[in-house]
Image 1 (cartoon, rainbow, N blue to C red):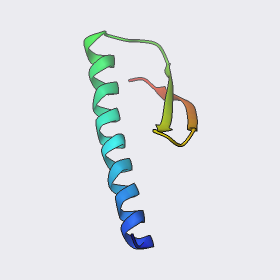
Image 2: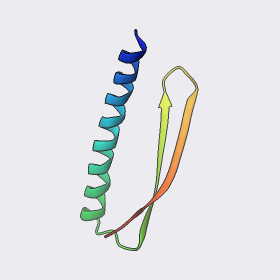
Image 3: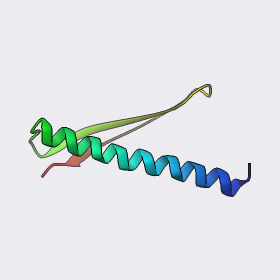
Length: 63
């Protein structure tokens, strides 16, 4: 696989993760009527068979 194909594949995956994650967060905030100033979030990335575990934590400001 070429570097370009590899990069495109990664970007495609990350775009799907970003779009679907945003939808899930929005749905959860609306349906459960979550209020407050911020929502603490954590995303964990793993890759089967590699031992990769990468955690990103952050806060999302609520409407």
